[in-house]
Amino acid sequence: MITLEEALKIAKKKLSETWQGHTIKESYAEVPDKYVFVQQDSKGVVPPGGWHWTVHKETGECKCEYLEREFLAPYAPIKGYKKIELTE
Image (cartoon, rainbow, N blue to C red; front, side, top):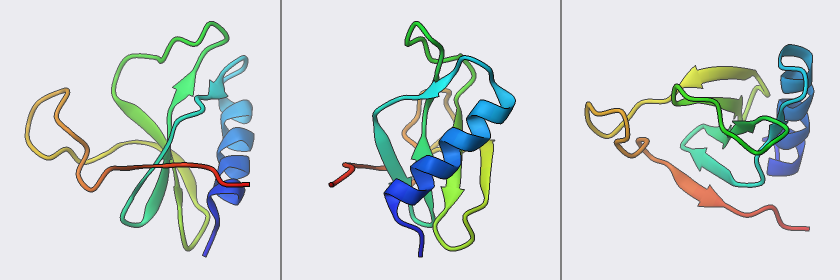
């Protein structure tokens, strides 16, 4: 199983390959089988659209995806979403 720290490194690498000048926001979360990260630009602005970077906890697969919501509404809570902290 991949740790949050390892997943963060994977997501940062993938993001730097696809979005120049963007970083991962220092707010982490998880859904049952993935770690969830939010992208931001150099000014701290999160791009619109509701997309998140995810890293699968078992395989390490990293992708940008729209996560399933609790109900049909743009700002509905993400299904199974739970904030987590990076421990040192």
